[in-house]
Length: 467
Image: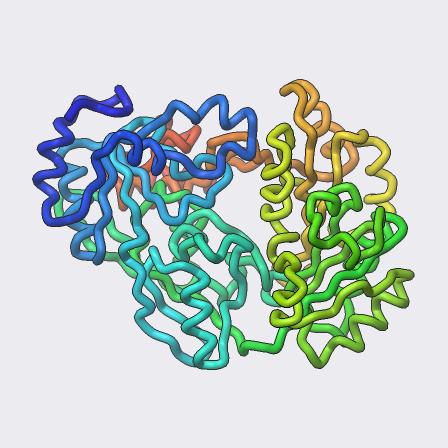
């Protein structure tokens, strides 16, 4: 079996045979399919990553099988990329160096549900975990809009916030990510447990510094959620209403999203149910807070168009509130027109509707705003995931510069570096990579700084962050 990637000289047929009875995929078409994630949201990433492929897919179904797979990869110096549901947007699961793709979805058991927590294997789907929690009257404190196909391990390795973050904070906030277990990559991979703040050594490192096998996350009491949609004459009014709702003591929302009226045309099922050519606010609120939501919208000068439970929404054949939030909004536009892309932009803290109003005309007609509201620590924050009608890299850079010049930091969605998007080297992550992955086999191409520190000891790497 020759190298599909053209980047390795390993005998992959022999490698697959040595893994038996662990399931493998060798068919080139299927290997290439599993070498992709949602990087095609970005025309820049699409150009860079669309010809990057792995050589073999392994599908272990237990931590023991995962350890055996990692030991064999270590013996062959095989590059490794971990893949959950493949919902990443930056090429996190793309094997840029070729080699072995390890699909985690076989590790999908929910191990334990207790009062305020759930422990599940890394490949368990978020939707399946929420379904199991529902039987106990609980739900996850936060989860991505892609919960139907996203895995819990992938969320911890690459995610930061989601549905529920306006109520419960970011994933890295204390108490949300309670514990995780990760395997080393060496001749005899051992499990290491990370508790509490230690989980941040592994969290959001794109699988560079350890192979997550199970995760313990905070849960919250399940509530009877009602989907609400309200419309406004101006975008800044919708944004101001979202802020008022986030600050309200009368409404315990778990989702607040504002969407430019032009984006709403890409949700044709909403036609006739929301006012035409108006800017949209989407929220999920507890059933008992409906009156508080209506009063808040009225006070903000808006109009409540829809207020419905899940059964009523399904009867009307309307999109789920999740579909109009986070990067599902981007996906909906891309389904219709692949010339669109997006960006990730921070906003002034505290949120300032006047700053939004002042910025909009400076961006141009090729940038359509879309904001998500969340909490980080004790602060209400917002971030913009705008639809951008892509033309050239220069124009995208100009848009980024406009945001930055007006006090809106850009966290670039068009780079495949974990330190991209304005982030600096995380020497704690890199030190733990050296401890957990001494040969640097795990997704190392995604770090701009690993090659510079790979020869150092973990303590020496960590000290660089303290300098």
